[in-house]
Length: 86
Image (cartoon, rainbow, N blue to C red; front, top):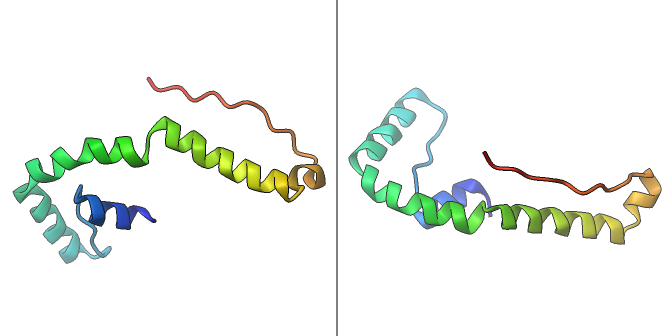
């Protein structure tokens, strides 16, 4: 699921084509429904973009690569990663 899909599913924003007219319409829609979209943003961020989700996705990628022997083949050392929020 991509970000566009998440935005559409969770109704937390507007997706537009990268054209001035379309972007202006999208901004207008956001302004008209600011409270609606704003109320949906925080729960969406917590569900899809939390630190836990981030770590979970990286672990899945590393596990998949390790299972294929990628780290031995490339002689890569996996070091712990510290993620801080300020």
